[in-house]
Image (cartoon, rainbow, N blue to C red):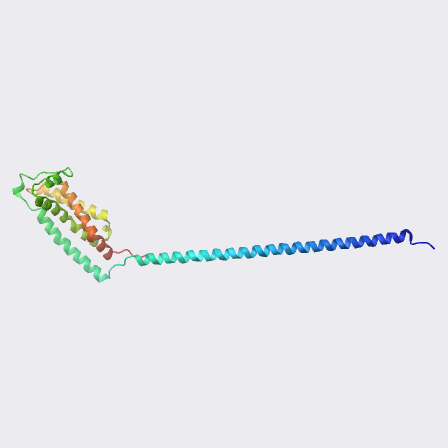
Length: 232
């Protein structure tokens, strides 16, 4: 009898090769599936992380928005509101009457001729020169009278101007307006009134009085009568 021979060996080798190929394909398929699972896992992890970061960013933005609204509300609460309209009109009317009365007194004090002072009246264009003379007087009362009187003449400007003129509530505008008015008064004294002379130190003292009046009462009255409107 003949043995299986070469044909049987070839069939066995072919079967072994098929098994090896199938096993290789199975291993490759398993590896591919494992890689897909790993990739899906990483994507899921990063996706969840990104969502968490977005949520945290949203919370942070919301917190900042709430803080901004709170700051705006606090600022609006601290702004001063004007007085009711009837009180504002009354305050302005009283301030106008006081300014008229003050103008009458100022004219009487500064534009009234003084023939007895013709020999001692002299023009002063040098700031501080007359102040030095006031301070060198033997009687301290006379110095206080001269300096204090000129300062008091300017105080009503600092109190009444912020109430009467909404656009002149600032200290610089009040001082500038006072200086201009008193400068005109001094020029009128020097040119038209007998026994009177122009003195730049009087203008300085009057302006200092306006600053004092603004600090003591004028700025408060100006804010109460002409407070700025709150922005929406």
